[in-house]
Length: 281
Image 1 (tube, rainbow, N blue to C red):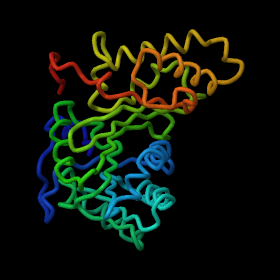
Image 2 (cartoon, rainbow, N blue to C red; image 1 turned 180 degrees about the vertical axis):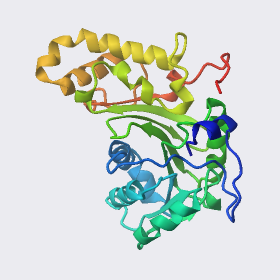
Image 3 (spheres, rainbow, N blue to C red; image 1 turned 45 degrees about the vertical axis):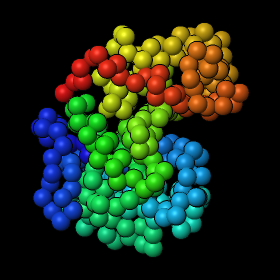
Image 4 (cartoon, helix red, strand yellow; image 1 turned 45 degrees about the horizontal axis):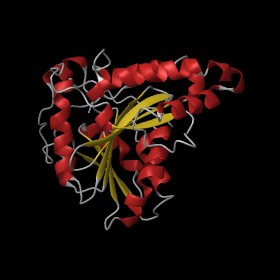
């Protein structure tokens, strides 16, 4: 969970409590529909995983002061599996108490952190959780969550702006990261590199020459500029043309014939941090 500035400098710690929750409390800010783009991607890409799960338990890690985004996740996931169970986890016991009135059949709240309160979910959404941790804390946080996954389970670790207009997320399984998704409302950006300040924690400090994510963003800008003639037809068409251009040189995981406006998913291998560069923080 993204900590305060002072807390972030210390990295993850074990907080006292029955669950021995791993992490530090977030600032907790959230807004309705902040995670809508991420949730719809989860439904679209991970719906089959949820439908075939023996136990459809999903954990929303670090939902913040308000449980609204956890409730929205629950409602959206019910569209692909009616008996889904969503457990919202927070380290701050006061937030768990405050969220309790929103509990219902299939929706509950408890205290916990990266250890996932000892549960075995098929899916974890950790949105705006690692944002203020140092980059060096990411591998341990990922590892803690991976160890708790049910067989075949997945993690979505992402970050977004306050209104959910710009975001990115990493998809992970037991073995490690699989893909990076960049997402935005295309009418709110001037160029694709505007997404740089909403890169996931594992990559936000890697937007420098020589790193894969920097090369991707620069390639997106170049393709965006090449299709400037489409600006009169709208930013959505321009984004789609940009994505089709990139598919020739980048391992995009989207449909190259029908790229989704404002969304681009690339194999993690193309953007993974260079091992010969030290992590920050």
